[in-house]
Image (tube, rainbow, N blue to C red; front, side, top):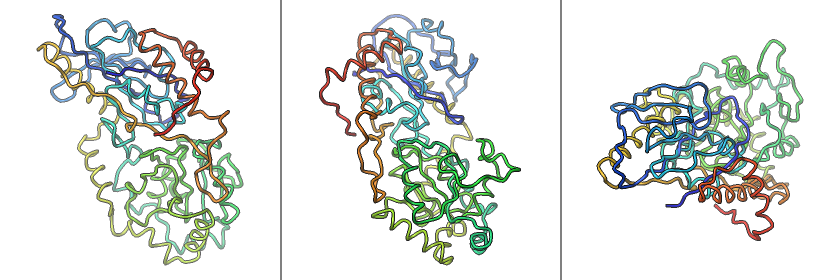
Length: 442
């Protein structure tokens, strides 16, 4: 079985779920009897002072961050946080009975595309990510409740939005993104779009309008508040670009305007239509040939309230997307269990299976992570027509750097060398001098 490892996450956002678990099931004929009462799942990346039992139906596992317990049993499950993977070394030497699991709910930007590389994703036995292909997926993690999409608590009548446009000077579009330099190149698109459509930008990127003085909308907590939803609801459209382009990577940037009753202008996940409440509920820029066509459509809807309201019909008719309904139905079956613990229990069952098979001297089915479980394509840039097709400067190609880091991790992993972060970085820097070709295709 192929084994590899990887390094380096970038930074942790406030919402980041810092869990990763990779599982390799050891198949051996050892006579050592493994305890099957409460096997250990270790969070390799610290999640605070954790030392507890977790109950998962008929299975129970011990959860810990105490690395001194690594040798307590011959079968271990390790939880890795995708954004910081490799920063504090690895549980080497990797035993045949070890199970590794990956938990990653953030965009590839937060680990510099490291987890998108084959050499890294193959290290894990089990994965839990936003991509539907992963072993324990959570594609609608930032949608709290499907019923919120049809709720009209925040809905502002279109006639009132038109009045605010004419009398209060509100732009058609609200822009509240705070990260100005992103792999999705969204700031470049914003700047081009502003040539054709007025945009109220409240964040630090191309800032042209201030939040009301009495609010805390500039904070993360503020942007989660009902007051902020009411603020967004005044606008006809909301700029809803993710910070990276990755299948099924959909955040509150999409859900917030849909809940508020504002039409999102969307770019990010190429599979976003699979999750929209109705066929007409968002403006997906990839449906248009160029940015002028996008702007023309926005201006048309802004001037024709009856056509604009067709994008809000789902508030009255209900969710029409059967796939979204099914995804949310499955999520509801977990009885409110959060995605952290859901993956914990998933791994707990796998760990018990591995121990049972080991003690019975039976073979176990070994799973392995695949690129489709998280892989995100090379970041590009927009051209003058608003098409996301321009290759980035090779000197600033973080995807290519991730390729070298992933090869360095594989080098040390395959030799069971507990390399430091610096060891991996130094080895990765050597690779451009010896590798004449980097395979970046998905």
